[in-house]
Length: 97
Image 1 (cartoon, rainbow, N blue to C red):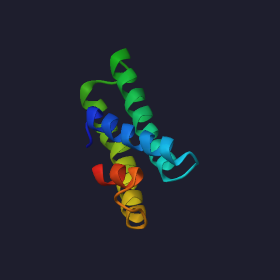
Image 2: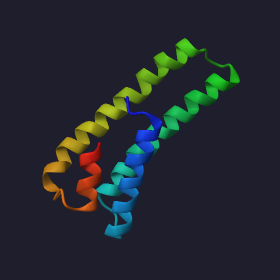
Image 3: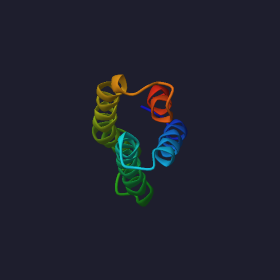
Image 4: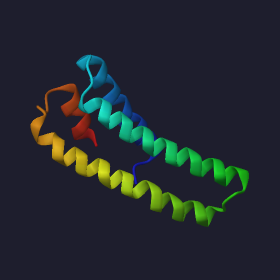
């Protein structure tokens, strides 16, 4: 699973691509998918911190919720990358993942 620091770096690349594009597109979709991962992770960490779940349950739930989102993101990247020039900001961001 992508570590949080790595995801932050990837997110920053897509954010930069979005700023350059200046219109909705692939960068927005990528950022939305990354945001969903952050939200799932945050909710699980809050449950762990509050005592609603233990570490073992956290690990299982994280795998159940985050891995499918990461797999879907990866599939989306593979489907869209061939149409994107690698020399563009969005191409650079997609290549990083």
